[in-house]
Amino acid sequence: MLTKSRIIWQDFLMKSILPAWHYFLLRHSFYPLALSTLMACGFLIFRILYSHTYNYSNLIWNLFLAWLPYLFSLFAFYFYHVDHKRWGLITFFVVLWLVFFPNAPYIVTDFYYLDPRPPIPLWFDISLIAIFAFTGCFLAIASLRMIHLMIDKSLGKIIGWTFALFSLSLASLGVYLGRFGRYNSWDILLDPRSLIKELVSNLLNPLDNLGFLGFTIMFTSILFVFYLMFVTASTPTDLESG
Image (tube, rainbow, N blue to C red; front, top):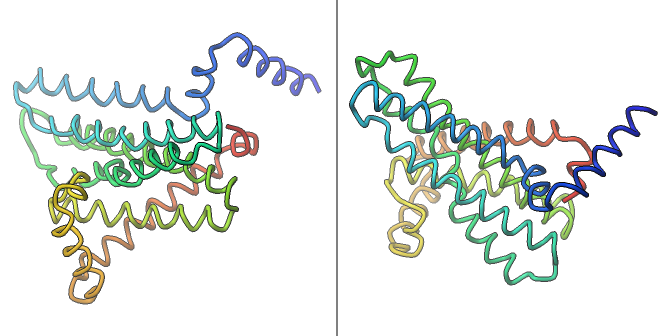
């Protein structure tokens, strides 16, 4: 009984004293994600200063792109929480989120460039890429959770989970096209014909592109398990409240 009263009192203090935006960000993992980002960038800056080289500096750009879908989902969820009838504005941010969503888990593929680069030990570079990759994956998962909650509340759990699985599959497709096809999110606007041609070719001939099929299935499965771990680790109150 004492513990429950303490929780209620702490919740009252947070809502009444702290700014609303602070509580909103706290509920959606902004601070741990920001801390992880600062830590990753700090280690990279140390590497640059110590080695006098700019190896892996592209990780900063990739992490910036990984933050975009999270920020878009944050705006979408905020406007939904304030007034869920503003579907035009909410849909705008959801579409932006979906377009840039593959950028978040994309950083995992930067292990592709891992190679011994003295004087930096290999274990440091493995840890460095891992920090960026984990941050990107958690940005993806946290952003998907917000979009999933909106759809769950508006259209039901079945549609919500269907959309979540579809989004993870689409993200895997995007990661494959980005890593091996060298496409970017903005190619949807700048070069849509080439992008659609590449995508349709892989989808219609999966047995001729086993790498595409295997990568998509494997990456989707990994992201889905990560997402399930994130969802089940949340408390029932977190899942129901905004």
